[in-house]
Image: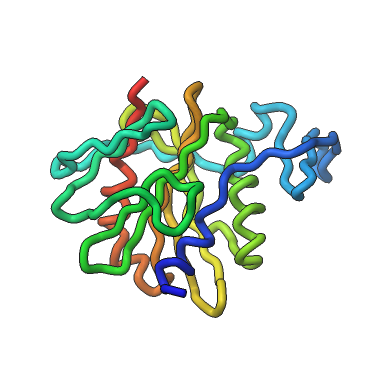
Length: 210
């Protein structure tokens, strides 16, 4: 299997939601337990307050991002620089709407869209639990809320290991009444800092079209 395909597998998870039961955490917060091991907070205000800071900066698309790639499923678009990025329909997983790649380099991206609306506060836990089905050691190295082109998004950086490969991914999670978006870049952990600027410029092209 290609290295790209191996990297892609860890990121090809939809934000699945299953049957639920109620429980109380050891901090006294009421949650809904899902059959796949994930949970969501009953009180959304409590969920928003759980250790995820908000970045005070405002993020916007790059001046060189001249092409708007539009989703066919939800009311969002993705500004990118076509001189730097190749893009197209997915070759490795039908759950994704688009795949992108930094030309001639080892930085990749995937755009996963679903029509279901998911509270932003629950996306971290759903994403982690689904990713751990493939890479059990996946963990968060950075998390924060950001304002990107006027929209609140969740930013996550995750590290994990699969088949001995140390994988790093950084991306945005966003949801509105038209659906949910995961806009993610990924590479090996040793290349994350080298590609950080390109990664950030790409995901900052996320815009709501509604």
